[in-house]
Structures are given as structure tokens and as C-alpha cells.
Length: 321
Ligand SMILES: Cc1ncc(COP(=O)(O)O)c(C=O)c1O
Image: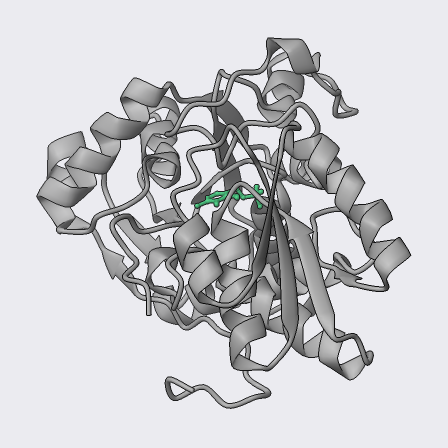
């Protein structure tokens, strides 16, 4: 399928120097790692294929998850390709922009009146009861997620030829950032690279435990009060009151001497427009938060070398089959 063989994880996404954005934002050596180039348009493809193949290997006939939409679209795509049934639970009040595509892949959609995290817990129990393979964040199968995202780090080093000084990543559950950090950490331990980049995590002030914890200089990631969080179309992929890999992501940010910062919806839209204008890429507003964060935290005088912005998703991506 699309030139990928069964054993190969999806990936090998484009990496390029964003010279126009460098000029516009007065940054030096700014690089984009474009995860939106994946087959279903987000970094989730990195882990979905691994989960689907693992589920098949373990003898399951159904894979399930709770999702804001992007991960569901990705799991349903690979489940369809590899002949597995899929059950995708989405909070009913979410924008549901990918539901049509998920249905077109033959998945069953459960639209449930519950917050995302409550749906993750519900699907955990339901998967146990129904003997489905649970691919939700934080599940017993989720170790695969870090392995999938480690490949982003390996690709960056091979595409850049060295470890960058900064890597900026949007934060929801923190899985993507934690996985990329783990990849750099492994390369550092093996002596393949001489430094681990400083990690910048970006998320929404509408609710994210990792940024909230970092801002309070807490070492243990906290949960937020569910009644205080607020999803919007732009921030849905990042909003959470519980981040399932939040502790790993928070540790990565501290260990790399990095930063975590909030990016408002308005800023997400503004930076996605800038990316479209200067680099001709249409990206999801939430994924543009990584560039907004760089613009906020980078010190132009001292932090001038090799900044990598991970853009996690493209927009206007799908036509249904
Ligand atoms: C496009 C996009 N970017 C970023 C994230 C956040 O990733 P993580 O939950 O691994 O922190 C998500 C999560 O759904 C996403 O869909």
C-alpha cells in the first residue's frame, strides 16, 4: 500500500528549512517536520498501523479507541486496509469533522455524551468486556505509541544531520512529545548524538495539565477540574483535564531544560495562516501552536541554532471514498 511494506512503520515525513518564515519571524535556522504528510494527515499514522498490526498478531478481530477525531480517522484507515473491524468513540459535542471519513472506512462510530477522558475510561472497560483491542492513550497496549513517535526523532537527526537545539511539539496527552524525547534520549545514550534538544510543548489555555503543571513548576503532573476545561474547534485535539502521558512529557520538558506554553485559539489560527502564506502548507490550527510557541519562547539573541517545529496535522485533507 502506497509504497509501504507491511513491516515498515509509516513516516518518512518531509523535513525542510522554512526560510520564508525565518525572515517573517526573525528566526534563524528554522526547520519544519511536517507530520501532516501522513496518509490520514496527522502524526497518529505513526502509531495506528503499529496498533492494527499488533491487534491482528494477537488474534483480535476488532480494534477500539476514544478519540477527538484525528486518531480515529487514522485507526479506521489502517483497520480497513488490514481487515480489522473498528469501533471509534467520539464525544458527541465535538465538531465531528472526521466522522464521515471514519464511517466511510467501515468503522462503527459511538457518539457519546461524555468528556474525552471519560470516554477513554468507558472504552477501556467496554474493550475488556467485548474482547476488543484497546488502542486508546494510556491503555495496556500504549507502549507502542512511544516507539512509533521515537521514529520522528530518528528521522529529524537523519534529515538534519545532527541533533537540533530545540524541538517544538503540540501537547494533548503528551504522547507525541514524550515519544520524540525518548527517541533523542536513546540516540544520546548510544552516542549517536552529542546533545538532547530542549523541548518546547505548546497547548491550549482552555485546559491542559502538562502546561498547567509546568507553569506552577510542579514535578508531578496534576489533573485539572473537568468543569473548568472548554473545547473549541481549534483546540479540541489539545484540550484535556487528564493527559495520559502527561508525566512523561513533563519529565521530558524538565530534563531537556525546555519550556511549556499556552497558545490561544486566535494565535493558533494566526500562525496556521502564516504557515499557509509563507510556506504554502495548510495545517490544523492546533498543530500550528508549535510555531506560535517558538515565537514566544525563543530568545533571538542567544537561541539561534536549529529550531525544529513539528507540525502535527494538515487541514482540508480528506475526501471520502
Ligand atoms: C493534530 C494533533 N496534534 C497534536 C495532538 C496532541 O498529541 P498528543 O496527544 O500525543 O500530545 C493531537 C492529538 O489528538 C492531534 O490530533
